[in-house]
Image 1 (cartoon, each protein chain N blue to C red):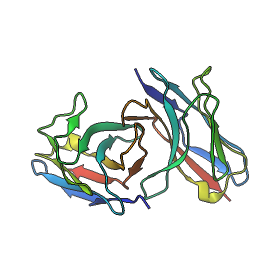
Image 2 (tube, one colour):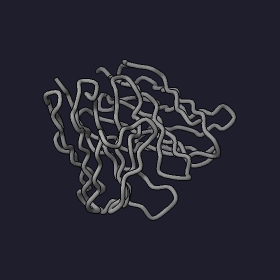
Image 3 (cartoon, one colour):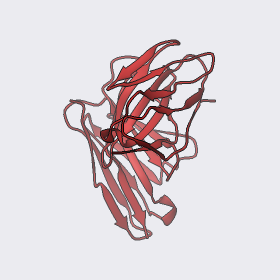
Image 4 (tube, rainbow over the protein chains, first blue to last red):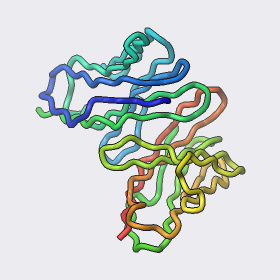
Amino acid sequence: GNSVTQMEGPVTLSEEAFLTINCTYTATGYPSLFWYVQYPGEGLQLLLKATKADDKGSNKGFEATYRKETTSFHLEKGSVQVSDSAVYFCALNRNTGNQFYFGTGTSLTVIP
Amino acid sequence: GAVVSQHPSRVICKSGTSVKIECRSLDFQATTMFWYRQFPKQSLMLMATSNEGSKATYEQGVEKDKFLINHASLTLSTLTVTSAHPEDSSFYICSASKGGSSYNEQFFGPGTRLTVL
């Protein structure tokens, strides 16, 4: 089957700390992988994506590399800011339709 | 661009009543809309996929007579929870896809919190 497992939160970091949120997946075929972010009171927004193995998605200082050998897509940021406080969702799409499979979400709080 | 709205953002209703949730694509035409349900600390679970002008496709285990979906136009889809019960209390999120390729990015609404008393 298809599923996404991501690190449970909540995660609390000090400003300028290094962030890693782990995400692993199970999928048939060759999925595309995504990170979505949800700020308080808002919808999910696409943060970054990667469509094939070894691709690196990046946006707003966040990065994630599609690792087929470890079936992982860990999210990283070198120096977090208070404005990065949000819930982060890892997701996959099998590329054979529109269905997305989401992880449970990881809440991040960055304190000054 | 690509903004999706939902209305209402929060609704509280009595058991046995029906509740309608609207999902609108504000600045694009959505060929496909999706409805998800999210329980606390759990994943978004796809409930159904709807294409404009045709019947929705429901995921296994989702009661189509309980969760009525109407996608009457390219900018509006509605989810009606019929005869709601406390176990239907949840966070409902819609998303919309512009279409045009085998992979279509989905744009998500802010969600609707339903509480059934």
